Amino acid sequence: MVGDIQGCFAELERLLKRINFDKKKDFLWLTGDLVNRGPESLKVLRFVKSLGDSAIVVLGNHDLHLLAIYFADHDARPKDTFEEILSASDTHELMLWLVSKPLFHRDQKLQACMSHAGIPHMWSLDQAETFAAELCEFINTNTEEYFAEMYGNVPNPWNPGYSGMQRMRCITNYLTRMRYIRPDGTLEFAEKGPPGNQHPGYEAWYELRSPEETRIFFGHWASLGGRTINEGIFALDTACVWGESLTAQCIESGVRTSVACLA
Image (cartoon, rainbow, N blue to C red; front, side, top):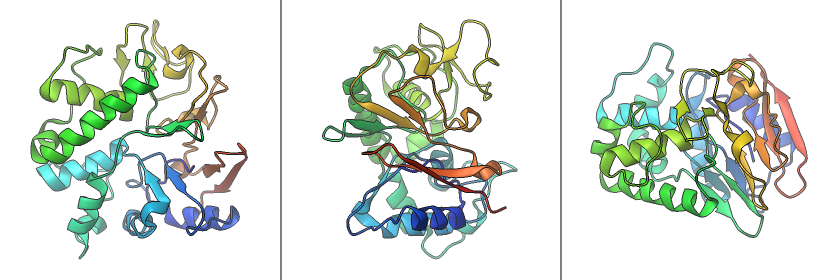
């Protein structure tokens, strides 16, 4: 399991070499945000795609942002680093591959699951799996509509009665943008710092989840430094793109390995 790569391809190569990754016998779980801000997003996409079924990827908010630019002609932001991807000879092939990826993955045998930002406390893992599958089906059958209307902080909080794009946007925000949350499910979108910086009434999402057998792995929240207070929930974004490190965790043994950012 490897945390957010965000275009840091050289560090990914070093990390996989250090853990002796072998695509013929190993599976590489990736917590999303393959691209953006780092220097070699195109190489990351091409490499992960080349792994075939050995790579298990969930989409992150930066991946969705890239897809929205490609499929719905949204404007790139000043700090985005998508130019090389969007001008590549294999752009369309890469975008079709990326858009097909899920937003949640679960392995019953390993008792492990992952999504980019986590799982809100209001949802069981079965519900998270169902909602994520519903979202993926919507994305792949209503691609242009979804990416045209994906952005936004409403509706908030969750209501199972939502339908259409309201429901899809709400599911997207929980799975790819969540950090702080209120007990009623209301998300705080602005604060990205570690716990202790949030507005009153909000908690880190993982603090509100009850213990369960299946472990949850997530990325997205770089300022956690790869640490949570919940023994069954594992943060894997260790801020490589911000000059820190890229981290892998063996799902079976729990052993962590990190390589420093080369920038």
